[in-house]
Image (cartoon, rainbow, N blue to C red; front, top):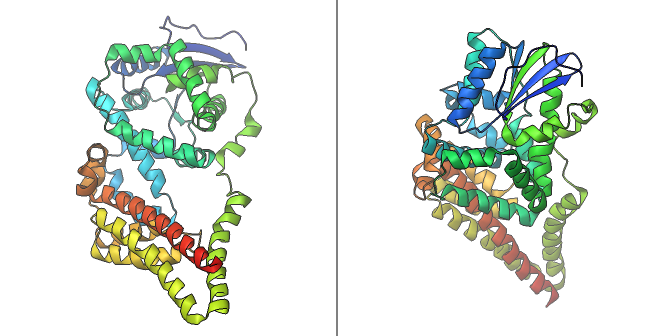
Amino acid sequence: MTESPFPAHSYERDVHIISHLDKTIILVGTAHISQESVDLVQTVISQEKPDCVCLELDDKRYQALTQKKRWQSLDLKEIIKNKQLSTLMVSLLMASYQKRLGSQLGVTPGAELMMAATTAKELKIPLSLCDRDVRITLRRAWKSTSFFKKGYLISSLFASLFDKSEISEEKLQEIKQQDVLTELMAELGETLPDLKRVLIDERDTYLVEKIKSSPGKKIVAIVGAGHVQGMIDKFDVDNKQNIEPITQIPPISKGYKILGWGIPFLILGSIAVIGAQKGASVAGANLMYWIVANGIPSAIGALLALAHPLTTLGAFVAAPITSLTPVIGAGYVTAFIQVMVCPPVVREFETAGDDIGTFTGWWKNRLLRVFLVFILTGLGSAIGTWVGGYEIFKNLLS
């Protein structure tokens, strides 16, 4: 690092002055639900009048914060076709939790980022969106998490929705302290190391490289306080070559592919062997059992979700077929049917963040009901696969 060519104002501990080559980077660590952070961001940008303001946002999250009518352009059918429904659901879960905390403090989540964008616009300062695409981050996080820890992660997210305990501004300030943050990051690293690597470490690297490549010699960068220490340690390291690998979705492992196609092969192969050994009628009975064992639990899942009758019928028909291919699951088929026959309206997209935190909201809100259909029919199909497979293998070996 070189000595900063710009005089630095006196700031509190949440602001760090970093010199890198010919750039001076003023790194502001914030809490996304703190009024103090909103005020701090406005003060720093107004006083420093930098050449560029960098934000811990990608284009999708920036549009979500700035466009009031963003839901009107959201194509839910396209999301389901691209198998991104689970990503959308996790995004809503996280946003709902942050929104609830923010409402207790009277601050909209991401208000400090909006203040940074507004202040920069008023001062005619260019903006640079420096975070990795949130869809890539969530998909990398999901793929990096083991099967059992996926369950732990999902249950923790759902539990947070119904946690009604309040958080004070004083508690928020305690969380923002560097030693507490380090402890929290270390705890996450111990319990879910792969998740921390994707959500924190990789994004630290991405943010730093994007900030270093942003235009201007004096830059104000607004990031969550949890990223600050990890980012500071990376400014003297050249990580350009590491950007491409961390912006790609990891391919499906060969083992998972073998397992995914192996189960259908074993099921169909077993029915064929049963037919050869015991006759076509016995093979037909086993095939019928497979259809019923898969179709009924999936249809029950649709009924529990209060899905449209056509969706319930689709669940019964689709589950026996989708269980024999890893390409698509029954949940995606039924979710698509539900969207076609009972599409959510714009208002339900806008209230989903509130409705998701109540038990009845999952059934009243048609967007959340699509998620319920996706989850419950997929779960029913999985149960049916194990029940049907067990019976077929038992008949094969008897």
